[in-house]
Length: 415
Image (cartoon, rainbow, N blue to C red; front, side, top):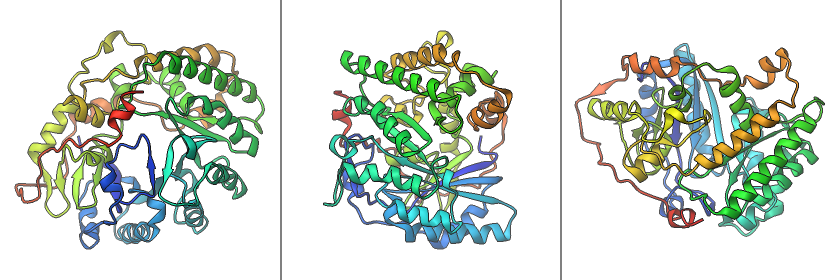
């Protein structure tokens, strides 16, 4: 693992202007005004990494859109690096949408690509049901107007909308999709809260109805290119079930881990941003380098076999966040198994309805194969690869696992 780095995330601010009811970050952190503390060391550190030819750089927080001056600091550093070595950086963000015009301005100025922006939006009642704000001007209308703004700015097919599946929002998902389509947006996806309890029978029934309604809408609109929308969850499943011949372990193991690093606000380095949010599995520090024993521990965890019945599982699009499993169950492959039934429902609805869609070879190349297809080598290559990270014997900045959990953990586990 870590023979080549193609993803880097950098946390530049702790502050977030929302208190979403399911957020996995601790509230004391999100209320902090702390910003990244090692800009003077960042350029040399990144240049010391075994960088791929093209590297995705996620600048994160907190909420990054309210700290765009910090984003620009990272952008200038990356530009200098690109001028000195042969590497292309693609900057990306995930935003709560509270300063979408600021990000769109970056797109228009060529600083970012529109398809590198994901807006987390919990539907037509986002503020009422999920997104509690620290500002008085926020409302359901404020977040809904973001959808129309994306379309009006000309990015209906590029900027992606990500909808959080919760008991409070599930009955809003189909009306929210229709709202998006009604104003002209053509990108939609949903995601699960990895630590949540989704076993309530009413929720399961509502979830099933919502996914079936969305399937019907996709099948209905697909033949018309002007009406067709990108349904990322289905694109992901199509790549896994229809296009990939990889093994189950390759399909369900995190593709990013082992080729990515996260640089936290204090310079600590983690395998990804989710480990850093819980202050767990630190593998290095920007002022020292990478710790060989921590890298070895991470690799051992990554390649451990799942403790679920994966050999008979049919859910090839299954993904339990390894960081979440590590925090809650003390092992990256000690599964919570809280999504199994939902993934089965999702798969069955997909399989039944995808047969109703006529898909050409051209569509496969241009619409369905969107970079989410998985090849076996992503897993086997990591197993055989030699680590090329700059290792150190120093231990001045090492920290033990803190296993921090969100203030919302009891709420989402009681759904």
